[in-house]
Length: 302
Image (cartoon, rainbow, N blue to C red; front, side, top):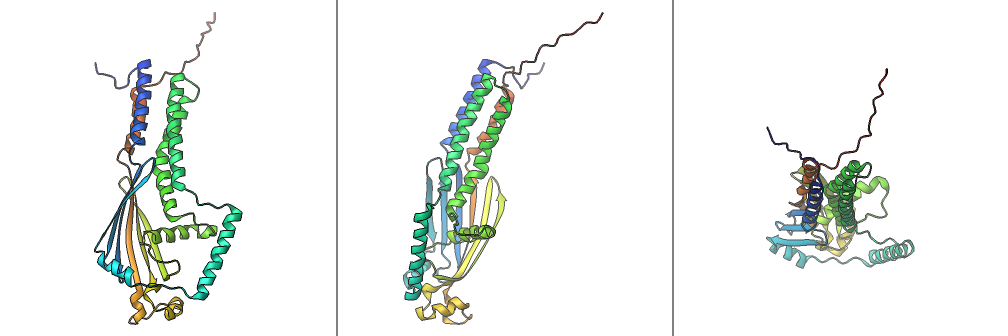
């Protein structure tokens, strides 16, 4: 006779199943949840061909970042020679806008949301509820199997969707003061600008161009991005207005202020996250106590 893969219900099986769930949750909890691999390169302009590489690990408490630059001499010279000084009139306008935004923040309480912290809290709560649901299965409450399956699906969704999404939202910011129909475009621009090594002042880039597209990769998603524009830090102050009105002609002196940065951002799940998928296997191999069926009485007719 063959050996049955699925054992009969027993108290030992209940304890083993609960212990396995707790061990998997702890195993995932202390590991990296999201690994971000960033590669970028200045492909045109003064800072090219500088490469920027970053490895980012997101765990249950903090975000660890390791950044390195290759062929950085051109970028260092670019930052040394660029000089951006905003005209007084525009500076006053900027100050007035800053004052208005400060008043709005004071009156409206619009602190920027820590999206990734919110995502972490959702994962913690779902982990705890999954363990509680397993205990309720052992106790034998009604709809126990449905509740347990729902909490497991919620945990998988937290790692697969919530953590990557909240990381991207933290990266691009809240995007306040945008109309609903412009929110997607705002996120696109913010993300592509964020990957551009921003050591430049606000308003110093003219004729900005942003693009971003995404594709699925093994255990994650990849964003391919581009950011370009004319850096006014490489333009004489008296030419700011002319460059802002229209792009410089190809052979003009100001045309050399053009900078282009191309990059890709890979968001991959931590290597221990797939172990969550083993939990339903324990449900199958070590079944819970079956429902007690009501007794049926046969009425004999004479």
